[in-house]
Image 1 (cartoon, helix red, strand yellow):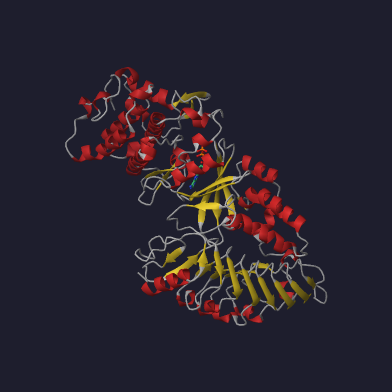
Image 2 (cartoon, protein in one colour):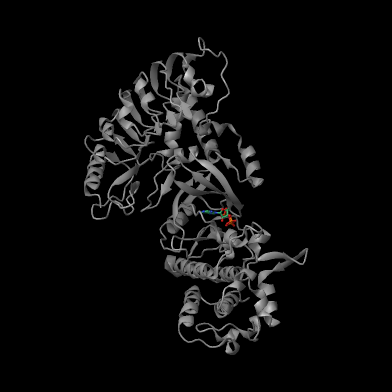
Length: 610
Ligand SMILES: Nc1ncnc2c1ncn2[C@@H]1O[C@H](COP(=O)(O)OP(=O)(O)OP(=O)(O)O)[C@@H](O)[C@H]1O
């Protein structure tokens, strides 16, 4: 526990106004989930403070943050910090990233930037800084990105000859004179909104730039173009999250411009963005859940690099990489059926569900045009991709141990979900693409509670239909029993390696539940298991046990399915049973499940023969 750093942080937060509550409790460890705080690997020092859009107002108190001498990243963007450049920050000699954009800082920039010799990312844009750009910035030999746009900086642009610099934005200031030769590799947009020229330079025409364009420039794509890309299922990296929000911004920005006569367009855009991302406008902001260590705002999402992960029933999901290296999954919901109140109520319920086998909902955003939800990003992919992707030569088999852990974890997660809201909560969309691996490599369920927000008459696509219980004819009819059915299909998928609806023998479409039932009836049980599993010794009995559980879950009549808590103990018993004495394979039948006996009519009375 870095006691000194903790004290410094408490001194900081106790002495500055902030409208969003933080979970910085003196009684808890600063390194164990304090919002926006990251410690080093042995928890001896705080190395990152990220507090964007928490409604900070006023000056940064003296002798507070400056005591965090090992700090590498400081992000206080999108707040209402005012006054001169905080002198305290000059003590942070180990900073690699400093993000103070979108505040109300004023006066000159610090004269000597050499104190931050390790700085790679510097963003002081969208403030009210004036005076000239200090030449000492050129001493920052590791700098890769410099953004001073939308300030009131004046005078000549100094010769910032920094070979590592890939991104430069000095636009919308009052800079004059000639662009130095060393900066001509950057696009003209880096200097727009100033009174600068390229005259007198050796090359009269801008040379093609090897530098990366600032990401927010991609805002000029049209929504329809992006939707086209999305529908095309393209997985190339785009800066598209920004586009999800552009209409909201555009509208407000336009209104702003109509009502003010300011000739600095950048600043007007800024204020409209602030209104959306700040905390004042309760109607359109990202709402975070208690205990969430993530700290970013819409502004950050706007700038994020985003990759389309896939398009599902409820919308499109993106992997968004924020400037500070935080990676999240953002789901853009389409056709939300309910109004704001119901949506928020459901989000609050879901957001407060915390269990190691339930993917935590981190934040949501609701406006008339956009509904977004933010989750942690799971970098191993979903159970669906683990099972079905790369079935060719490059395939890494999903071993039995992990499959059993996925089943156990997901079952526990669903059982926990069912215990919420007075034992009435329904997931509504259990399927392999909504199950991920948690840090212990157990299953973890995501996307809970979305089904009832969506249009109840949307027809299920075939992929989804395979998981849907027979009685669910529209999304309003989902129930805990239908979750159990869907989980049963997931178990069958885990065991067979086959999708719930798959093509077999050429064109013929096979429904997994029917296929497994018929193979079992024919007493060819051994045929159902994924060939990948057959290489593991001594797991037949466990596979058969899991198959029994799966088949009991997919019973046709809802009342004949086990409850999820029973499923959990049955799945857990598979391992317990194996450790103790267990009946031999020959003597076990489908009807011998310890805690639940499925009806013979549904699954047949035949013994399982391998
Ligand atoms: N938090 C996440 N981390 C990593 N990948 C994710 C995350 N959430 C979703 N995905 C993946 O993104 C893709 C699209 O997900 P999405 O939830 O939009 O659709 P789906 O799960 O296929 O269908 P549905 O919308 O019906 O649940 C899927 O492959 C899913 O596994």
